[in-house]
Image 1 (tube, helix red, strand yellow):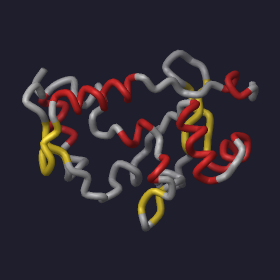
Image 2: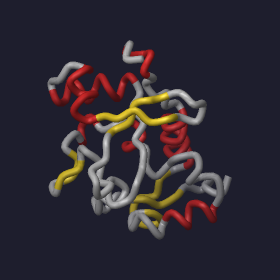
Image 3: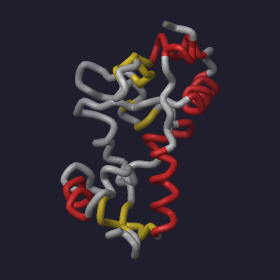
Image 4: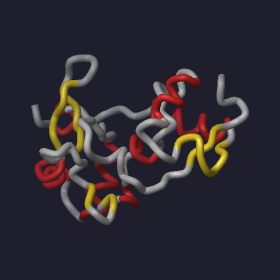
Length: 149
């Protein structure tokens, strides 16, 4: 593993990972529960107001946060994430995602889009692995999970 001695990353709060390009933020059941508690909404209310159904790798539909027409996350505002304290695991584990950690080249390529990569805090191998495993453990909510098929 190219990151056995750790990697540097410090979030600059630039919000580039949250806006200005198309993306999908998959929501696990825990993510959905936490966001509903944060906003004091029922699951149905939160899904209707902030979510969309997207096709997953296996052909099923799973829950994702919506995007604005400019490709900003629906939860992003000029002040940052409206749900920062309850943000989804996909968001909180960035940039320690498996595909970004696949090789040194992949990691360094991501630096072009994120000014915090290769700068700031040195994350240990164990810290990185903990984040990567959390990211890999995301199981998105499917329509059948919410009886919405």
